[in-house]
Length: 513
RNA sequence: GCGGAAGUAGCUCAGCUGGUAGAGCAUCAGCCUUCCAAGCUGAGGGUCGCGGGUUCGAAUCUCGUCUUCCGCUCCA
Image 1 (tube, rainbow, N blue to C red):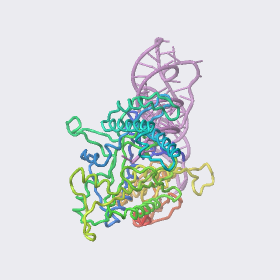
Image 2: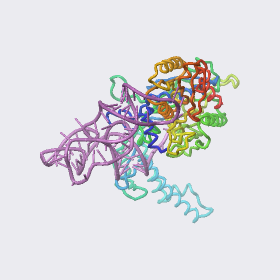
Image 3: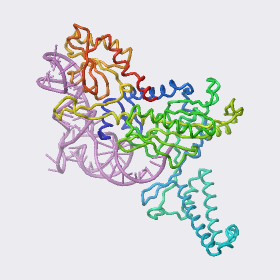
Image 4: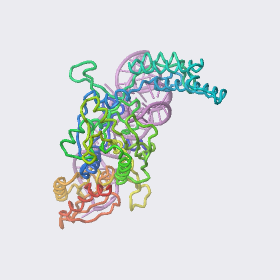
């Protein structure tokens, strides 16, 4: 099924709506509808129980979205999460202004090295590179250009002076790499963090950021959690929560949104053991995904460029309709975050290791998955249009959402075979009123039985319970399976025992172990 | 943010060179119906994405804007 049909289905059946649609929508923001929120909650529950409930040494928190501004100074986001961008008017391409200057410096350095290589060839054994660098006019000129550009770049970046950066690009006569055009726009600062004001205070003192990742809420609570849970290394802290990034381009439905939900676990370990834990969590997380989705839809993808905090990083990618894309990241974050917070806060963020009889800042291996991306993965994998099983006519098709029963929004639908028969209706409603105490169920009688089945198929309900005339005599009902369409007769009092184990999370959690 | 395309009922679309909107499906009500989108009758639902302009008159022409899709750029 193509991507357009998927987004249409998601809207039609109450999974995903465009945000603020009556006002023409807000770009890259989406709302979860009645079925969407049920599915998403189930996915979050699967993650939470797998991480927290099933690990002695992982505990959960739920930190505030607002955090002290210094948090983002320490984490590096104020400095590194900040892109000065410039457009070329002729080629219509966008560049990072600082990268353009850095490329220029690299180019000059290339010339300088070429000069030295030439001299080395000329002088042979007798060549003294240090002396040559100190005296040769060309080399000194190149070095001067490099130092000058680097100095001005550093000053402009530190001051956040975009005007100076623009001037620098002009002074250095930098042209667009592909077309050679020098027709540049102004440089604009693009900070990927959203900011807001605390209280009525205007200006820098009151400036707050919406967190761009949930991880920092865990790091700043490291000591609190350790003190209150008596956890010993290695141990982890898990959290599910919203994060916000002012993406330049947010697109592809709910894949990249400016407001999104992360499910993160920071695992604190002895320095030196990060490789071992990194590998362990890589495998554990893949296995967790394999309980929901087939191997061929998933793959590892190593990072070439590491983030400022990481010494190793890998993505678990999922094959979306638009290609293999990141679903989860596993990062070895070293002691970068805790050390930075320790320095800026002046509070010790260390662990006393009784075996080694010393204190140290723990290393961290992080697993971080996008809840919305997982939702999209589940939807794209499950949604299909197929010929109705057991029907010969190839035109007889149905749209079915073949979700794992444990994550399906509605576990069972109860429907009377005929809605104009009071006895059938009242028995069906009695069953509904009992089952709703056990799991998410829906009562429906607005249509023929075939239509009701199709409606449930479209939202992924694994079981349909039909009350027919035999039910009135022997207190049994039929249970129809979403995937096979097969029906079995079950006594009403056995329904919970029969359906319950198939729709709860136990088997899913076990298969992920 | 730039370039291209699109926006008419919940959905899919029709609406000729400007004359104030239709279909099918869906929804709801009634009748009918003993297991995979049956049938009959009826109803509700659109100031044609939004805002200007041209015109006696705009869904239709024009400008702007918003949103979506594709490409570029970006992606901790």
